[in-house]
Image (cartoon, rainbow, N blue to C red; front, side, top):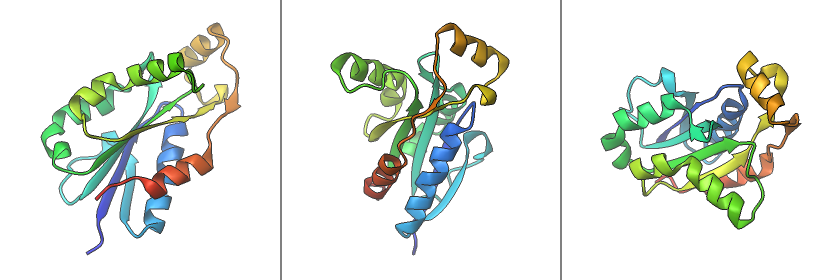
Length: 164
C-alpha cells in the first residue's frame, strides 16, 4: 500500500505554498500519495501516514494557524513521522548568529514536536504579493525584493527527508 503523506502549510504571500507544492511533487516522484493543502483546509489527520508541516515567518514566529493546528493535533502528530520546513527571508547566512536566530523561529514548534526534523528555506520577497501592512513593514526595514528560493535544495531535501 502506498503511504499517504500530507504536506500542509501556512503562507501570507504565497511563497510557502509554492515550496509546499514542490515538496509534494518530489514526494510523489518518490512514490508517495501526496496531498498538499493549506493548514486551514485540513479537517483531520485520519488516513495519513506522515505529515510535513511548513510555515512562513512573521515577526520571528511561525504563523498562528499552524501553531494552533499543531497544538490541536499534537498527540496524533507525535504518533506519525513528521518533518518541518520554515520559509524566511532574514538570517539566511550560515554563521552562528544567523543559525541561532533561525532556531528561535521554531523554538515553540520544537517544544511541541521535539523529534521532528526541520529545515529552513529562504523565500521570495515580492512587494506586490504583500498586504499593505506587510509591504509597509518591509519597506521600513529596507527589505529588498528578491527570489532567494533554492529549488534544487528544496528538491534535495524532499528527496532525502525520512517520513516512514
